Image (cartoon, rainbow, N blue to C red; front, side, top):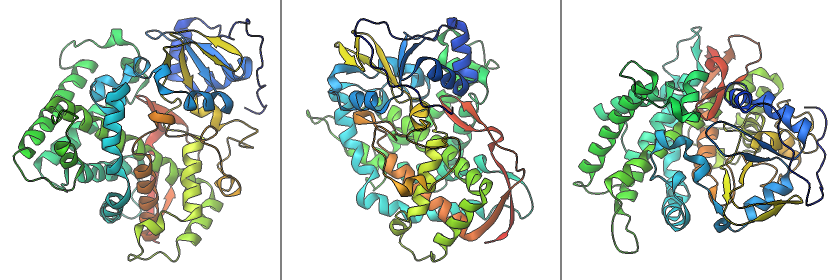
Length: 456
């Protein structure tokens, strides 16, 4: 995208611009090759337009900061934020934070917030650094490995440690293997299409794609329920599961086993899968753009094993590298859709009840007037100016902003700093790497093959 899209100021009675491709083609493009589809639609239709996909109501795609601001600042009671997001319920279940609505969502969010902030975060810092060191020490010099697999191992160990307070046991090993196998279901466009096209969600036996997914999910659920039931009989610790077990609603009732299971599954999915891809992208860009690696290593020069993790997280260029990583290829292209429960006027259009508003992270993050040369990886842009939460929002916004965003950034920074201080790496190939769909997220094609060339 090289041209700045026009800002629309239409007559109130004019119809919304709409992508004219057949619905089957839009569905195929949105699953297999969504970025070119979005960029073409943006050039042709501007800052607000209608797209369609099988199995979903027409969605109104927003990619102007003013429109994003209006959605994020409007009273959440104007929206139903769940109906358009059931796509992930096969993975997370229906009773986790992501798929709760109204007061139930507000109460659960309030409960979860302390888990990822303050003293708890600081306590997690040493564990993150230790786990990053352990995993990186398993790499053999001059032997290629796939960084995306390594970062998934790191983030999974971190999330299991923070959720359950465990480092390693038989249940940990089973969970790790089953989660990896279950999420590999969605590695291909065919696999991902099962989330978008509910007609494909049929159990045709243990060898069918959906059948394998369901059996792995059932095994994971059994492990989680066994952990929950066992922990109810034990003294509570400082981990997230202990916090959830201790929680009581306004009537003094604890969360049910089913609610706890869905919350744990949501955390396991959202808490490691996305951060693993973000880290793989960061390692790719740091080593793809020599200037970035040079500047970052210079900033990390004074870091020692005794440096407080919270001080590492404040480093400006490290923070800028993480921000630019999440800008150029956001892990999800859209925020949560919001379906209107009341009419709303957005960018001159009167939108009716039932309209599904979908802010597009990717298109906003690539607006030329906000981010000159938007396809160039340049962390310096985040040192030169501060972007509003309507111009830069990789974790969504308003009451649907990712509750663990601060933890994810903290983890990214500590893993990068720890590994780059200890290990000298290089890409196996200088060829550019493109994003590919992995379920609802986007990850580097091929997983970023790298090789250890020596100690840092």
